[in-house]
Structure formats: structure tokens, C-alpha cells
Length: 326
Image 1 (cartoon, rainbow, N blue to C red):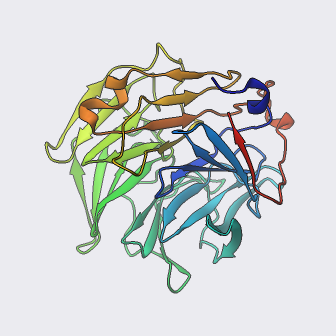
Image 2 (image 1 turned 180 degrees about the vertical axis):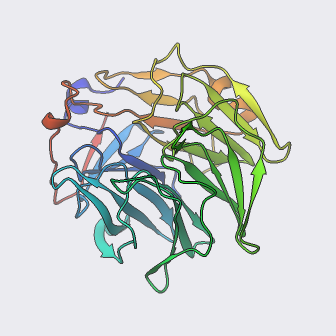
């Protein structure tokens, strides 16, 4: 069982961002009014407090690519500014450095990496309106560019992934008229959009998406439902609701896949929940259907802030890496 006193030292804030490292560990950044960074290992129940980001941010995007974690945009609660600033984290050296700014300051955009060379952002919100802009970042030249084509309509809070070197799949989020249930594919060579089968309902995904073994898992975002999409079968399958574990649409959670590198040994999924020190086990057949998904982990907003009040969020500033078992 986790150490309750130890867990209370940490605060995983609402609208943080999470991504997966090659070793199966999860990097969680920011959220609330925090610039804190955590590295979490689910397999041995360990949290490492890493060096903080240079910029406090929430509703930002993060992606691992080419041995670094890239953290992009978002919203700074301290200054009440939407952000174009971007940072790069070297997990081996535990160091942060700024990269070039995006062209548009925004939060709540979908983000993915392609070919270990480029990062794409889709839509978002700039403080005035939802956006239909796509931005593309070149890791080698450190340059952001506005992509040649746009989204079919303005979109925020979507999610995306790249199953092929010339393809990005975008789904969920919010249009001006409500949640989107659409799934769209962007052909990067032809620069055209193609529709795929819709989800059963619109979902406020906010990058909470896991792609593994040709299957896509979309959890929450509207009610307490979960769906799985098979790229091979080109169809959606409803999974069992997680309502018996926690009744929340997960809109302010962050999400990442975790695994063990050797053999990708599967375990049951874990949830770390606001105001609770224990981990709740989700039934394996929900997240580990046919052994296709090894771990799916959600970290809830204000996890260790007992008040749940944004104004009471602590602003962590840690200069050295600290490691704890729980």
C-alpha cells in the first residue's frame, strides 16, 4: 500500500499534462498554478520530483520525441496569459531549456509527434475563440510554421496520434456547437482530410488518448464511458463503464500509457484519485482487453490538494531531483 504521509507531499494539479517515456515511466507537468514535474513509475510505485519547468502552465500539451519531452503553450494562471512559449526537458540530465515559441499563444490544443522529426498542434483556444490553425514544429531547425491546410472547423480540447509516418488521426474535443464525436485522418503527403467512423458520442478528450497495438482507447470526456477503436477492423467497440471506480468525466485529468520494458508485462490499470491515498484497481478487461493495452493511468486534478480550490494550489519550485517510494 502507498505511504499516505508521503503521498500528501505531492500535488498533481488539474489540467496537467502527461506523456510516456521509452522506459514506461510517465512524466507529468504543470497544471493549476504549478510548474512542477514528476516522473512516476507504476511498476515499482515510485515518484521522482524532477526539476520544475521554467514556466508555470496548465491546459498545455506535452509529447516525448527524440530523447526529450517537449512542453508547449498553455495558460499561465499567475499572469493570466495564454502562452506561446515552449520548453524541452532532457530526462537523462534533468534539465529544461526553452525552444522557439509557437506562432500563436493558445491552450487546449491537440498535439502529436511524427517521425521523430516534427510536432503538430491542432486547434486550441487563444482567449477569444476556438482555432482552426495547425502548427508544425521542426526539431532540427527549431522552427514553428503555420501548416498549409486548416481544420475543417475550429476545435479545442481534441486529441490526436500518428499511426503512420504520413498520417495523423484527430478526434474528440469541442466545436462551437458542442462536443465532437468525429474522427478525422490527415494525409500529410496529400494534405487532405478523410472521415473515419465516429465515436458513439462526443468527448472532451484534451489529449487523453492511448494508442497501442493498432488500437485506440478513448476514455471519459462525456459521462463515464470508454471506447476502443481498432485500426485493423476500422470500427469502434464500447468498453465497460468506469463509473463503479469513480464518477467523473475526466475532463481535467491527464492520461498516459505505462508499461514494463522487458516483455511489456501487463498489470491491471491504476487510478490515483483526488483526496484519496489508495490506488483503485479498474477491472483488467476494461483497459487490458485481449492484452492489447498494458497499463492506462490517469492522474486526477488537485490530487493532493484537499481544498480543491485553485487559489490554494502550491507553486512548487524544486531545484534538485527527489525520489520517493510510495
